[in-house]
Image 1 (cartoon, one colour):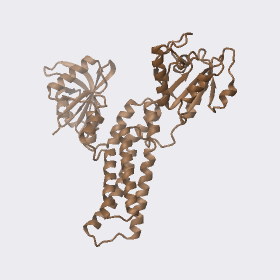
Image 2 (tube, rainbow, N blue to C red):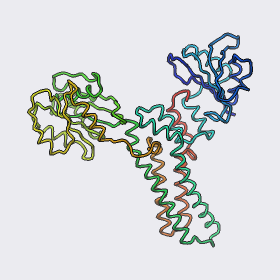
Image 3 (spheres, one colour):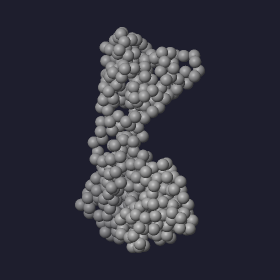
Image 4 (tube, rainbow, N blue to C red):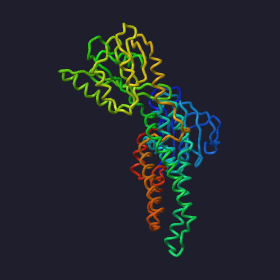
Length: 455
């Protein structure tokens, strides 16, 4: 019998309303002990999912708060257990007093993510849905929020269940062949199994290919702002952010280390990295800054190269361009357009960059740059919920695809039935890792440790 847990679900800050969530076999009994309804009757007989007005009192009958309460008898609750929620005034002091009262009633304070973990363990959701909960809580863009909401509804889990069931049918027949060796698999059935494996591989690969885009949507697109010293990189960072994040002076080499900030651009989250200007220098600190610039270039998924319109192109500019990986999207920014131009655009046009013209100080052209950035990362074409955003799911999908490809090759080569069977079972195990059907306990613990207390 699991113990009863409770937690403040609204954090430890002053809020208009503070919610305390209680879950476990004795949740309703304990709620009845501390909550006095304005209508005299036991909460044990209260209607499921109805809100009731009343008071919370301690063992001495002292009033702690006037609040609302709702009860959710098992199994029709978030966790699948008896649950109650108290909607109190949002004073951290009052909420702490109520939590202490619950602790004296032998209610344990919940660990991070323990409510959702119990929901998973009680079959209220699979692991993809549980991970969608934390994704929607942590979402920094509407695209990720919509994708997580669809996954919370079971989009990925339902697709995996369909594939799982079809593979189980093949396994059942192959087990029969192994147990009864006189039963041959005719050509028609072999072709049918081959088609089933092919369809499963296509579906899994389609989902797997969304991971890189999903990761960028969730974590942000690493965007390096690079260029020679004093081209206005820090001013451009400030202009994009809309506030002065970086120190700006007329002295070359002011930025000696990378400065990082996040900003939403359309449905994309940019992880902006303002880098030190690249130039030959004897200054040890500045040399370290240049090394970090090169590292940022190598890791970036988008590079904004800033040029000074008052300065002609030189070898240092082309050296910077040469250090950008060939497949990385790049945008050239001709900055300081409010000053007299000596820059020869024809030399840059040969690089086939998208080109934007800005004055970082006045803000002119910055909106055009933001629009160009959005073009580099258009909205995903996949339906909401069909984008994988975490590495654990990606690795499980890759295992499943590899195992099914091996099974298909074995089937075509007409090897022994047990070889095909082994590969399909490995695929089923990988799909089980994805949904949580076969995942190890330590992996489950690691997943739910990411959650906030009360969820």
